Length: 277
Figure (cartoon, rainbow, N blue to C red):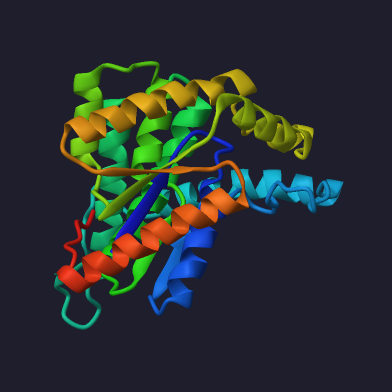
């Protein structure tokens, strides 16, 4: 079973994902997390102090280095998709991992081809992210566990809409058609003033170098409207979106309780189908 969260930046997707996983495990479910948190970034809260300067620089270099490493590994493979000859038989063979990697890369390329960000930097970053996400999604679809993505394809599509500067509904529908489908979609929500305060706190906890990899406050807040429209579109297409308020720890725990009860009902009623990438 795959659970996917989405919502504007600062809404608490990572915090809720951890809260939900903890509750599911406490109630006997085999649950695991697939996180997309920034390297070395701490949760924002009153008990958290600002990261030291060395941690900030390391975080920024890790954020750049991870996609660069992925790109170098991909470029080292044959560009024509040719198969490797087996030393023992001389016949052309391809491993299952190679085929799976091609599928993951194909999903990312298809989505990027349909709507590419205007910025070359963000185009590169999103394509690398989507490739890694597709691979993780494939693994989750083959698992018997409940896998929680703190953000995945719905979130990525909202970013493509923002950075590609195109909100055409027909195009967005095509993006949703191409993306793999989660068994359960959860939208995290909070008032604009709460999100703005959280984003300002996050920005203040980052070094100058790490801010190069972030959208500014206004663009982050634009994602609120895109998220609203994307949720409405999903619901018009017949997909259920569960909305969870993210005001404080109590509201998140209440939302986790609601989701846990729903999962218990579904798993008792019938097995859930999964759609692999």
